[in-house]
Structure formats: C-alpha cells, structure tokens
Length: 497
Ligand code: ADP
Image 1 (cartoon, rainbow, N blue to C red):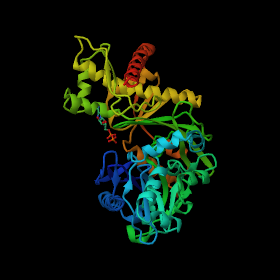
Image 2: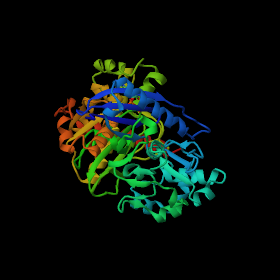
Image 3: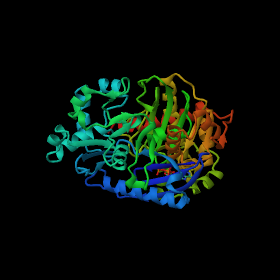
C-alpha cells in the first residue's frame, strides 16, 4: 500500500522536499539553498539546472531520511515560486538563458510603455492582472529580444517556455510532458481567466509564438508520470500549483469568503471568491485558486511588501532588538503605541494603496517615545496593512470574512496575532502544520491519486493549533483612524517630492 506523498516545494531561495503521510502529518523535510544571481541592479536570475539538481537532490534526501521506499510513495505534488520564467531548447533540453525571477525589474520601462499606450484595461479584464514586470509575458519577450537567434528558433518551434513547475515536469518526464497547471498559467499575462485558454490577442501584443507555451492542465489529477530514471521507478505527478495557491488549499480555504494570509518577509493574502472571476475595483489581482475537473475556483490576491521585514529592520537597521522573537518581550512592557504610527513603506506601498514612491514614515514622536513604542507601532503596521487589503477584498467580493487563516514566520508572534484579531474583529486561526504550502501540494496530489476521497475527508483531519479571538472593547475606529492619518502623511510626503 502506498501511503505517502512526496511534496516538492521549489521556492525562491531554496528547493525543499517533504514527505506527508495519509493523515497529512509531516514525516521529514530536506532543503537546499541555491545561488541568487544579480547581473545588474534590479535584475534577479536563477540557474534553471541548479534548481533542477537541487530539487532532485532534496527529493532523494527526504526519501532516505523518512526511511521509506519509493514504492511507498503514492504520488508527487509540486508547488513552485510563481512567475519565474525559463526558456529552453526542445532538442538539447538546455535553457537558452538563466531563469528570470519574479522579482526581476528589467522590463518595467516596457511595462510603463504598454500602460501609456492604454493596454491596461483590456489586459486587466482578460487576465485579472495589472501590467507589471512581475509576470511571465514581458520576461519571455526580453529573452526572445536579447538572446541571439532566440526569436527565429521560437518561431520554428524549437523552444519551450515554462514556469518552474513546467521546467521540473519536462525534466522529470524526460521531455514527454510540457504542461503547467492553471494557477501558474494565470500568472503569465497571456492567459484568459474567463475562457481558460491562452489569448491570441495578448500573444500577438507581446510577440510570443503560441507553440512555445505549455499545455494547461488541472491542479489535481493524472497530470504526468516521472520517467524511471529519476526516482528508480515511475511515480505519478498528481498535484501542481503555484506557492500561494497551494497555501490557500493547504489552509483548506475551500469556501467563498475564506482567506489566508502568509506573514513572511512580506504578506501574501488570498481570498477564495468561488466560481466567478471578480475583477477588482480596489487594485487587487484576480487569479485562479485551482481547477480540479469541472470545478474552477478563483481568488483575489493582495500583497504587502514589508511585513516581517520591518522586524528585521528593527534588529539590523535600528538595533533595538537582537532577534525577531525578542520583540515580543519588549511588548510585555509596552502598553500602547504612545501615539506613534509607523508606515514601513521601505520599497513603496502595495495593495490597495499602490504608491511606488512612498517611503517609510514614523509619525507622532514625543519626548516620551521609547523604543518599545516604535517597535509596537512597527508590529501594528503589519496588522493594519493586512486590514487594508482585507477590507478591499471584502468590498470587491461583497463578502464579510469570518476568520483569517494564517501561516509564515511572523505568526510566531502572539502579540501580533492577538492585535490582528482585535483590529479585524474576527478570529485568527493557525493550523497545526507550519509547512502549509507543501501540505497544499500534497493535498492536491493525494486527491489526484485517490489517497483521500474528497476535500471533506481532508477537512476532517485538518487541525487548528492556535486560535485568537477578538476583544470586544478594542477601539477599532480610533486605531485604524490613526493608521490612515499616517498613510495620508506618507502619501503627502511621496507626492510632494
Ligand atoms: P520568508 O518565507 O519570506 O523568508 P518566513 O515565513 O520564514 O519568511 O518568516 C520570516 C519573517 O518573520 C522575518 O521577516 C522575521 O522578521 C519574521 N519573524 C520571525 N519571528 C518573528 C517574531 N517572533 N515576531 C515578529 N516577526 C517575526
């Protein structure tokens, strides 16, 4: 009986592999970092072959650590850093250029031109996205325009294009399958989220030959089978999703209105909005949450650039704490923010404010202000930024959220989680498994192979670790009002350069 799922979590800084059992319990983890390549300011690349070898390496290691045989593996689930783009030669299997990473800004001027030409409303309506260097399309165009002979080869059908899921699967199947799942496809700026197909008008606009594109498949089901050469036997790949989508599934946010927020360096928030795409009026993205058979689920997405990173800045920039957990001790002796607000717009502000010129602002300082007040205002800023995105989601979807499911490093901070609950006046739920992204990939794969019968069965084994309930007497209006005055101050400063 094959009782285990191998989840491959291919992230921005490391490749990870995890084994989960039938109960969704983590058996072991292996992880390997790989090189970040910065050829010029604003450019970020990865060596696609290094991604592949590190991913295969950790998969072998985790199988050995778990003391199971490959025969015990029912299936593989893959989740990946999104938008990172690889173009490779179909004959040699070699990438023709490094993978261009989602963070890479080399195509921002081109994006500004497209916006100035008035393409944004059409693109937004079709793809649910905004025109930005972040997504796949302009990265591919750059490779075709800058790598010698690439465009001719592409037009002759000799090149394949994919995000990291496609690259891994193409290699795991020794070139047999060139596919991507619909969540990854929805990050291209080329995928029509209404018709669920590549869009010819967009392909033409970006000058990308259709034959380069992967076939789009479901996020769960019989998607591919590894060649015997990789894991000593053929193993089905039955789950694939981009990392944030996998996390939404791993949090079992399977009903409209359910939301997850990942508190890492930044925050990534996704809300399940059901089977109809809603194009945001509040500058959020619309994306595929997952597609399983006939079931298509959409999500609204909002990101916050600086969340846990503000705590790192208190440690490394200001030096008022020595470690991230120490901030919580500081909170024990700090009753309130002392009138101080902190907008950590170090790299501009993301959703729903979108001000790339905004910069960090601390306001309300008096002679009585202490490091504790500043630290508290910094932590509060994580919760207030989350509040702003959630309110935008509620307005777009016309759904009031009842609870927020959370994961990521900064959820270790109990003060922050309680404060978040107070500000939102809703429950905060933290699941037992901390590896929620990999768990989501494992769930998709397990469903795809029939290890679990349906989502209901998974929900029954999904356990809450900690729950935070809101204090009724928390003064939401007052504290959010102070925050919004600080946001206005930040905007005033950035707009009066
Ligand atoms: P990423 O995946 O983006 O690297 P993680 O999920 O590993 O992020 O979380 C790391 C972030 O969490 C860091 O920015 C760190 O400052 C923050 N963090 C970790 N522990 C705490 C804590 N106890 N209180 C507040 N922030 C914390």
